[in-house]
Length: 384
Image (cartoon, rainbow, N blue to C red; front, top):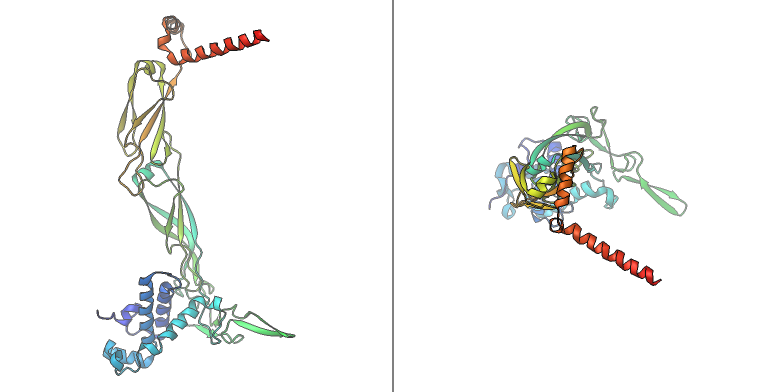
């Protein structure tokens, strides 16, 4: 398999200058460094690839040989001088210091690469949607106020055309030492704040921070069947890092508005429907709206009791990331008539006279038990 062109690997043109070359390598190396991608073999291979490309192109003699002969310049000890083995470790060391220098404390004793880059903060966004949106799934546009990379300085924090210089106070170590009696105290350099270098001139648009406050417009895909409290992670959409550091992540916390008719429990829906006393006694039917459109017909059996449920299979919510559907449960709430007219009262009283034990078996059985308890209590009282 032929090697990829080094310029293409780093995403730069062949006339790239040293500063832009280093900037391109630094961003890629920080992205794919094995310590930032533990266990990711693809990222490790990509890191080695960009390091090999930079190791060649940063050296003027190697770059000239590569521009003339391509990869053949370094095969079999060819005309480009020694192969990558002699300097490859130095490239890895450079970027390791660039990323993790703050934690290593400049242990190598040499000048530290710029370690002022810091990862941006993660952000939280609260998104409220309707139950219908959760049923259908939607693409929602949101506006997120955040710190984005400064376009003027491209996130470096330095004024365009200027750069960074080795700190004269700590000589690039990021720390200074002071003797106190028998002890030597090491502390963060007060001049460069531990960066090991100072900015020649800060960017006037971002005051050297490498980022500015902006409102970003993003599209969020809300899947069908999403549940209340679900968290959606958008990698790299949080705050931009300081001075070229990687961006944080954006976390979308989804909440679902209460619905006028339906209550939700997982993929199932519940709806309480009041029915008249006569409909409960004689039976009947009615319709309820279904999420996603259409109507669902509900049959009321004769003698329906208050609280009795009817199950409509497959009329609930979609199950997240599957083809399954939940069920819709209709609970019957029997409504007692109010504000009766004289004639209505007479009819109900007549109905009561005609009612037998067989018409109300539940209440008949209940009061039979109550009567038995009363008789038992009465007999016990007589014994006393």
